[in-house]
Image (cartoon, rainbow, N blue to C red; front, side, top):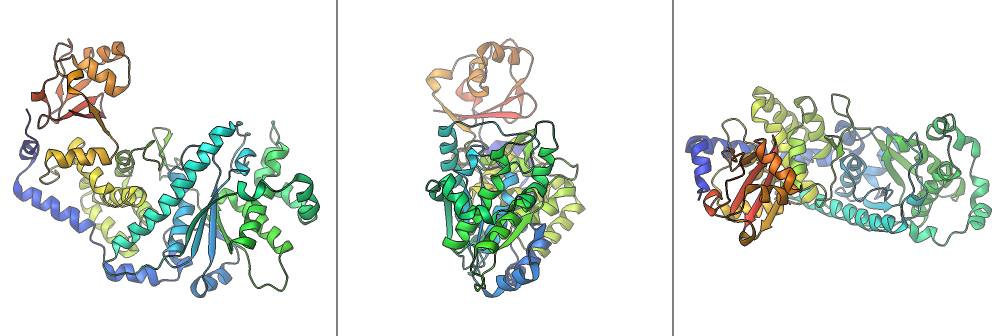
Length: 485
């Protein structure tokens, strides 16, 4: 049996453990004065300083309204996938910044418009989706939005020692609620005269598709009208006056503003506004939010919190300051200090550690970042650092919370060849597992002991950490972690 504490004794001494503990806690000690300054700064300039805003309609007028009037905002997402991904978070971050300053926010899921398809940012038509799949996605994304906002508010409150946040209302809506009662003829007779086809044809998302070889279907051409009506409905019924979206949504947002302006009472002083966020790319020009070509999702059942943490731990030094400002609520001046300290010795990856911890806490709840940090330092130790003094029960708890622990029955796997374990944990056939073992691609434990290529080594309790935890590495980087009960 491998005693768990011996892992750290082999790694470093007590003085170094203390230094690491100091480094860890110092990096997460939020400067309360700077936090207060950020929260009291005019919001639009603050969001611009964080890199969250690209374009704003009637910016000066909106900036004044934000500071003296409670406003309603929304952003929408169509149910084209089971989960939102990191690239979807920028509009949600803007809503969260507004919400903690007392404004009301709405996450809108396109249960109706998702059946039509938004052409913005696309060169080809979306594939049709089964109705049940779309309904399932609507339910999942609604839940993700609500959890993100409520978790985000808790995260921001956790940064402040004394209460600094007085959040507004949070809601999620499905646009099928109002579209289900709208008929085609009824819509045309009521609203058709307020829709200008010339403006629709002039939008970049439409022009590009019309000029392409495949053209554009009427369903996608009319999408901007549907989105405009969504904005109009929320403006009239939910007191929503700001739509937030990606840069590729600018045409749809301004179409909604024009639609509302044509329909609203000219005596009303209430005005619609739009805010867009930039397309976020890495310093290398790659689209942000992809890992090995795959999207990084905010649903922990698809992308475990540990994988999310690791994604941000791999952030290049050239991107870390930008992402700290966009995806955390740490004070901007403190972020500058964190990055400055980090650049004195980038090998410790201090700025990435702060970024990964904050984003994981923001998305998956307070404490998720610490759990992921424990695991990260065990599996991928940084130079001369280890996480201080943890017992195996704490480790099991952290693995479970991070969504990367598999529980296996000892009776089924003890005293069996390692290829049996590899097949189960790696999700491959027994033939493929035996080949991995034969090629020397399977390693056991923290010390990365290579499993005998003859596959004659049998699993015993003595090979487990504290007789409970199996660490199995397959290939260069993938760990399979199991609790053997």
